[in-house]
Image 1 (cartoon, rainbow, N blue to C red):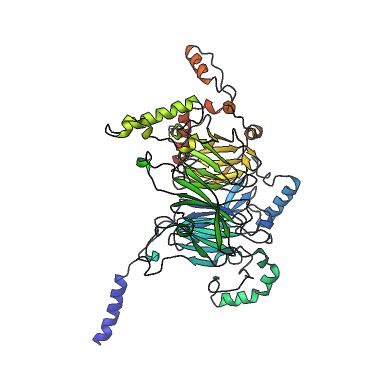
Image 2 (image 1 turned 180 degrees about the horizontal axis):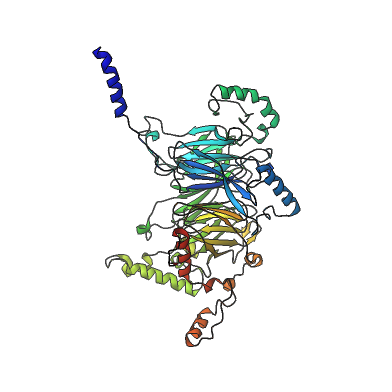
Length: 583
């Protein structure tokens, strides 16, 4: 009896000692990643793509609704197809008189914090009723390729991939710790493969995932295996993986047609390509084989050693032969600014990619190389005499901030050494704008326009002058302010006129873009008349206004008619709201 009496007491004691390792009090609200994909419906329906948003371990799928939220996806798709046949522009229905909104289609809780997110497009040649898949990477060097099941309105894993360090190799396995940098997932624009950049474990590795051939997807094959799929679902085998479900070259998608990948393999960039310190990667357009552009740092440096080691970043374009697993570097660009951190692939016919750094915007391709200096800190001899004077003044101001025993106090050029890119042929200075682009995000609107969002919340429009497959020799890039927005953690272009801006500190925005003057944006003059014909005479006009009151009225929409402080007030009011007194 005593032993029987102890059993309930020991059970109660074990329950009392249990505790929760993690408890989520409130779901995450800050947007970390966003992308556009035909996730819940195929591109053949004609409707706009879905907006996929991740917030820590939460994934939300939005649908774009126009005019009326009661219309179904099929009705919206048929309407968009009819409008596309009547007009040359498929986005003509998105105008100022059309109400556009976002509607939540599905929400999912994920088992881990999302490190990066990308959309795996349907492969070229695949049927138009095939949907896109999502590649979700987490910090533990794992990747899930998921698709949407319209029957159950749930996520289905098509494959799971893990590149963790096994126990006994390199000490503690990576499954027991979080990598300092999350893996970066990128996908080929033509849907031929996906890649995951593994930056943990002190090295740089590239995991490659070839896509399933487009001919493997078909309605007849899917109908033939419906009964087998139902039996597998009843047996609890609804989650499919290429490793535990080998189906050979003719893979058949479970739960509908969607993009998928085969078994992955890892390319050691440091050992095979002599590439280390990778910062970013992006797939390029217009190549017969998948080609990935890698931004890496050849020799690490920091701001205190710029006088000794500068211009350390390198671009390497690697062509991928996925069938034979052979890879080669086809072109390089070296001596790029040490602050380069992000790549943005450009569509055809231009190709190549934009490289963002703190003081420069660069376009690098196999045919040409152009750069735009953004502020006086860029240094060098690019631009006019005023830009060179501003660069010297910035160097002297930096030298004054140093101690008396520092060498920069005697030689101001050591405090702010000019980048090699500033004196390179093809580098120009930005006219009428001075901005720093660290922590910026980019979204390609068209082959000639790119939208940038800065760390201060400003939207900048970059216009390009394209001549064939390269930029023009003079006046290749022009940067101007396009408006104000929130402090963005990411941006995603849904259509040519709809832009999503995600934020961690403010409300995320769905922005409708309208061009004010198309002709002025396409024809880019090389003279300082980018801000109007009266821009060069502005300083003289300011002196006359001090003497008399016959100042001309500012033109409507002129960029210089609004003080810089008003932009900060607009941004503060947008983020935190206006007070009772209007301030």
